[in-house]
Amino acid sequence: MANPFSITAASNSVPLSDERTGQAAFTVFNASGRPIRGRALVVPEDPAAEPWLSIVGDVEHSFDIAGTQQFMVQIEVPETAPVGNVRFRLDMVDVEHPDENYSRGPTVTFQVPEPVAAPQPFPWWIAVVAAAVIVLIGVAIVVGGDILGGLEDARATQQAVAQTQTAAAMLTETPTPTTTPTITLTPSPTNTLTPRPTNTPTPVTIPTVTPTIDIPFTPLPTPSDPDRPPPVIP
Image 1 (cartoon, rainbow, N blue to C red):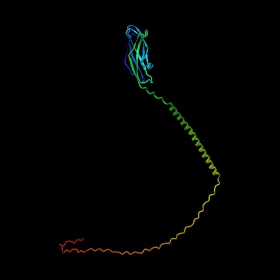
Image 2 (image 1 turned 120 degrees about the horizontal axis):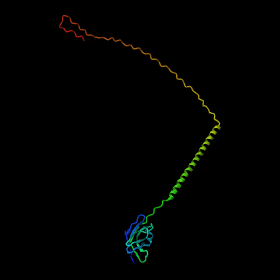
Image 3 (image 1 turned 30 degrees about the vertical axis):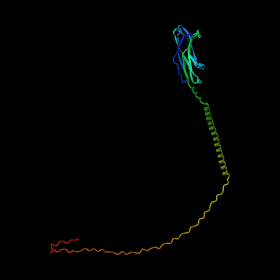
Image 4 (image 1 turned 180 degrees about the vertical axis):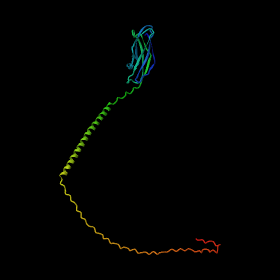
């Protein structure tokens, strides 16, 4: 078996995104010493993983002597894939002699993560039920309003009929004569006023008092006694 190609991988492991996808790059070198047309093949160890792997772009390439070409393997893991490591490799074959001239590439691994819980769809039945309830409430309000309005009209009609009947009865009734009460006035006894005796005032005699003033008399000095001081008249 000839080994016309040299295959290298950019990395031995490939991380997957949140969407459970990834890419693995391989570089192929023409080591046959002649121009050759090669075809790339993705070979997983587990055949169940084959649908998850595909080559991006053309799978065949015409190599010049010592020519190189890069191949990209696309990885797309379904949600139902079991958790675990998946291994695969990229092989190259000579298109003219595939059974005689082929080369195996290195093994690359990627990790299948836990299945992501699918988002629950919105329960549209809730919206339908809510809309139906709103419609029923609206209908009930309208119908209830009509019923209440009819009851009010019937009640008003009954009151009007009752008032009409009362007025008619009042007009047909015979008036009852009104008895006017007689008031008898009884004269009250007259009180006789007895005059009281008049008191005659007794005259009062006021004695007349004549005031008496005593003035002391001091005789005036005579000329024969010049040294005698003059009298002091109080």
